Image (cartoon, rainbow, N blue to C red):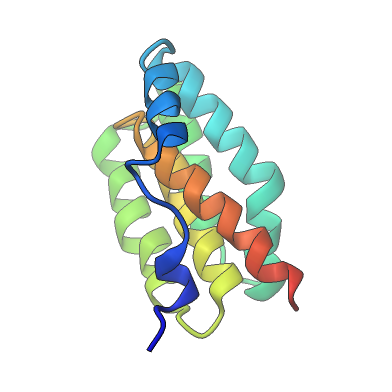
Length: 136
């Protein structure tokens, strides 16, 4: 029996991933966070919203992370939205892989404000979402 496709994509020990880890160490948390949030907002969020119109949980996570970067909100506020809204949306979408990957990507992008290595999860899920969408 083969593994589900969503479990087969990516290996954290891959040399390419290790090289990205070294690159992450050269950048500030703000630089990584801004890049991830901008990327997810522009390229990944539309995939989620195409599959789940009216569900604003991933958008709220990205916007809350942006507000934290501006100093307008506290980290616990943003973490609550990421965990209890954005990732909750992803958990509900086993039957819609592109939207699930997009929600996870947005959550990981927003979480970069806390830990920059969340950018790896953002990239991994960000590459899955369009891939899953291409067959639809």
